[in-house]
Length: 477
Image (cartoon, rainbow, N blue to C red; front, side, top):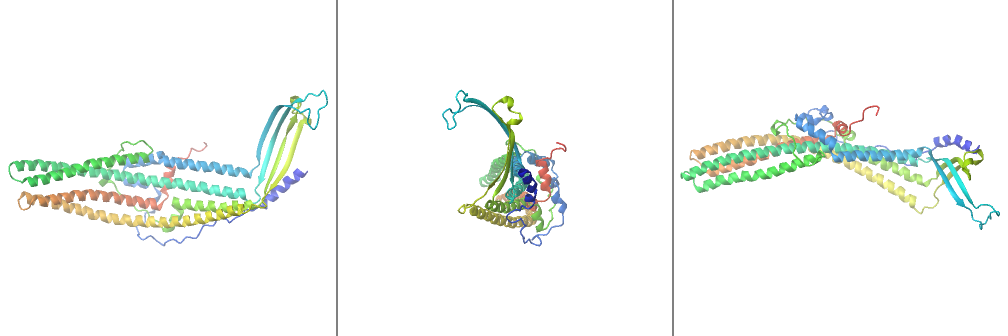
């Protein structure tokens, strides 16, 4: 009857139970009203596979390969699964734990012990035991619930960490591919320039033999040629290193990378729109920092619950017999029901230290959360301003390259007509070579700034990328 009464009163006790420690409330965050740089509305661009706007099918294939094969993303997914396992373990403490045990042994009783055996009794005997067991720790003060709350937040934080990796890997893959196509273009410029200089060297050698030009002018032309030739192996080395970098992003051994459109053919995607407050809902690093704050806040309640007792119910039902033939008979039946109560009296600051540590961890997580938001605002503003300014810089450099081409052409004509020295031609062509290489670099930087905008915005496309990285299993499996 006592056991039955305990089972009846147990739900009442659970309904009256409480959770210690503060419940989580999202901190107030002051957000700017708008970005420092305004762009036309293009909100949908942030919620699609934005890399497809470049129009390069080779890039699209590389991006999907990276999201599926990148080892860091796969490791992050494994960390999420690891925390899900820990969450299941913690939540299991809400429920009774059922088990069993069995034992069979051969024993010999002491004939000289405190209870002497009668003469003629065999001191050896067999013992058979078996039972079903049950135990239940009642979470009266919310310790287990706070622990589950903390681990649940850690699961969410880990998932946001995985989404953040998707964002970083996607951005890095696109930027690396753009960098590769820029190096390819620079190599083409260097090779074409070297060929033109080689033709000039051959022409000047003929002129020098006829006495039409001096040896000084011949050596000047040769210096131009070797300058262009020296740039070729350096660019080829950079191309190989860039291909190796992309291979690692794809989760592959270093090797060649397929190409698609030339750099000049790639179209920059639209700039996504959004308000600063949008970052609080979609940037993975901000969401991850907030979930870490939730976990730290729950840790305070778990620590405070250590001040209070733990209550456990235990029970067993089985058989004990010295003869196997009697093991399952009624007289061998045995059972036990019990309740345990344990709690601290004096811990000499042990629990207080854990509470103080948990509160400090919460304060640290709060500051990290605020700092993450500030950094996100900075990165987004920098990317938006950088995208616009780089676009202006590219336009200016394109005009400079055209002007230098005209300058080099006119200088060559003046030299052929005998109205200028080759020094003027040398200067003009060297300036043009450097300007063409620099213009290609700046075009690549312009694309990188636009990529940074998408990375900083952390738009809904991250969910699209995350689905590519870890496709959901078919329904019913």
